[in-house]
Image (cartoon, rainbow, N blue to C red):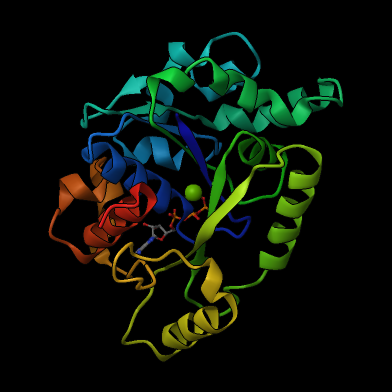
Length: 262
Ligand SMILES: Nc1ncnc2c1ncn2[C@@H]1O[C@H](COP(=O)(O)OP(=O)(O)OP(=O)(O)O)[C@@H](O)[C@H]1O
Ligand SMILES: [Mg+2]
């Protein structure tokens, strides 16, 4: 059974793409067959894996408008079991296309496209844009679960209530089985008072919703780590850039928690 996991938070720059790319890579290294779908017109997940936005002829936009099948745009990556469905800035045009689509089912376009390839993968990870617009709604509607990265900074929880409310409505109207896999504190820095405070607030108010390691039950938080910030510019997930880095170890822990492995 393939599990589809969306990485979502309408707040910008909180670590969605970093999480999508590195979780996907870590699951693939655990010998799972993984498809990373870049559903953001910024195409940061695409570039993070070493692809030049404009050198790929077909991307997720062509799938969503129906001129290509998802299987026809898939790219292989340096990790044999990790595939990418790339994006491109042209994806901004999709909002107009979606509105031309009949009201009923507009939110389910991506889900329908993913159905064709479910047998080929163990996990599909979807990176979504920083907005609660039609692309994120399509991503959430296509998913079994969602991971919400929360940056350990001031204003961390801004917008969270709105996102949780959107998920509640989606569950009621479109995707009853959508599970919140968890909130994921990102860019956590022990040395920084504010970061520690935000993390403590998260633990106090949302402990039940934080992702835990399987045996130790320790909350998983992604540290602020320079290797995570550098690796996209080398077109590599951090596991291929610096396997020993704290950032890599945190994402490998996250992957094991998803796999429910110790
Ligand atoms: N744990 C981390 N340590 C250090 N830098 C990080 C970490 N996570 C993300 N970054 C950096 O922070 C910036 C924002 O991260 P990222 O692109 O993953 O966020 P995003 O939520 O996808 O942004 P957007 O909303 O624009 O799509 C990037 O430059 C990224 O390299
Ligand atoms: Mg992003």
